[in-house]
Image (cartoon, rainbow over all chains, first blue to last red; front, top):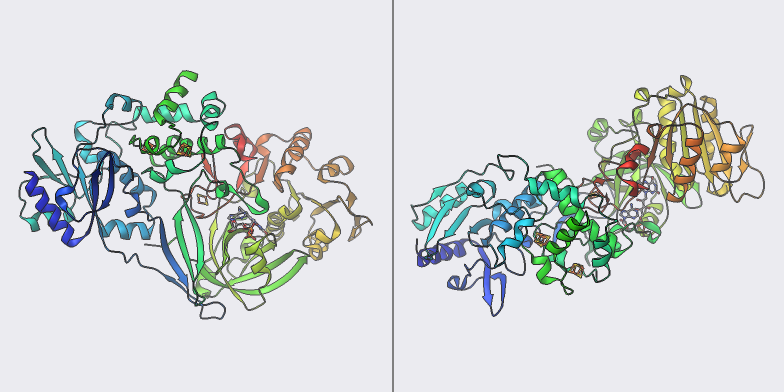
Length: 331
Length: 281
Ligand SMILES: Cc1cc2nc3c(=O)[nH]c(=O)nc-3n(C[C@H](O)[C@H](O)[C@H](O)COP(=O)(O)OP(=O)(O)OC[C@H]3O[C@@H](n4cnc5c(N)ncnc54)[C@H](O)[C@@H]3O)c2cc1C
Ligand code: SF4
Ligand code: SF4
Ligand code: FES
């Protein structure tokens, strides 16, 4: 397929969905609403922001309490009700993160409804410039990677700029059919975990991070980290959330879910202003521990997809790869 | 798909003021079919919400055999949400979801079946649940059950009106009051002046036994030390902890302590768990 066919596909998708994808603007690539499909970026540069808000919104309403007092009280679940979104241009890393969310929110009706409504279009490029550095992570580029990441349509670009198309779901096939694309390959998703079993790099990293709190690297980065939480906001695998309530003027109370941030002091606070994650060092460690210990333990999948968004956004330049490498030296 | 965040309506069937800042609430699901199906393990908690004030975790402190009819929570006023609960009256409604958490170990499966139930301050609430459980299941007539209750003053003691009934059911109750001026008597016994630790020197503590501890974090280490001196093994000591909670189902991360979620893997842990996770206390 040629770029113009892909543009045609994108235009069709844009007519059915709210299309969002990567746009290059000067030095920065960001995921934005798309007006002109020819502007979509296929260079594979990782966008500064992630796609996660399309699946786990920054804020969403869960239900409302019908009234206060009286026997007629009820809770009224909200339906997702937002326009279906096309997440165009998700890289293999982004799709791995989405695959993790699918596991974490498997029993969450709000997530599932959104996930069903949306369409996911992956693109192949995505190995950033210094690819070698990523080897410390679990960046699998094995041949059958497409079987281990979720997507509806996947666009693989070759050196000549031509596209090979894969479909990963019946939703994807329907769209391809509607646009008149007949040449594509069907991929059957078989789960995030490769046939060979758990990723050995993930297992090693898990052991390395667990119980490492006393190693000096944590104190080193804690002394420069501002606890601003930006890394957690852009990270495609971060999914902490808060549940809270808002009261409308008419007295109606709505329960909402908002992104949480483990770098903020209120995160672990209980009555009497007691907090458990008191120091920046504890919070940093908690963040790494979630990605490299808790997530792999629970979901058998890596909690970091090595996109380096956290490093790019960090005002003091804390580089997750260097941190993990230092951990290795400290061993 | 079942919605894990939707709470159900419960009616306040009964309120009993327990102290200046605490009250015991007997709650019943509005949907009676739901009440009939309700079951929990002793030590589990509910997330209670008051529309507009939020949601918080509260341990069920009634006997599990009553779950088909009602369940009870004892709430201490410490902030915005708990203040709202205090304003509730008999016949009012509030919302709950749960039960959550692991609960205490099953008594009959314990290695040492005599029980040492230790509660400090407002941490005594879950101990009341254990007491109710041993009485309702007639466990206290088969095995020795000794309750150690440390509190500031007589005014802050919870469940005072129940003490005599407990003693009648063969439970032993030892009370220490730290800041009490005049001596406090319950049935024909006297509370000691001092802290929980002083009970270990002034009274005869049963052993071998399985200990279950709830209380403020500062209480844990001294009490654990005394229990070990008494000869209890780590595996004989259980404790319940508090962390911030939002989801209650192991997703939001607020209650995580290294590799465990207090809402799911806790709130009750064994002293043995500390080897892998010293941050629990
Ligand atoms: C497993 C468990 C069992 C508990 N059992 C009891 C009990 O039986 N009786 C009792 O009186 N109290 C119990 N608590 C403590 C009770 O949950 C808090 O005291 C209460 O939620 C505080 O609410 P507040 O708004 O009045 O306090 P504030 O200090 O005004 O606000 C605290 C805010 O943090 C939120 N929050 C979330 N989790 C917690 C938490 N764990 N502690 C404090 N705040 C929290 C609240 O929703 C609230 O918005 C228990 C806590 C846990 C974790
Ligand atoms: S590299 Fe950073 S931003 Fe990317 S997944 Fe890992 S922790 Fe998150
Ligand atoms: S972005 Fe950098 S400074 Fe900010 S919390 Fe993350 S690591 Fe710390
Ligand atoms: S309360 Fe959300 S993970 Fe425990």
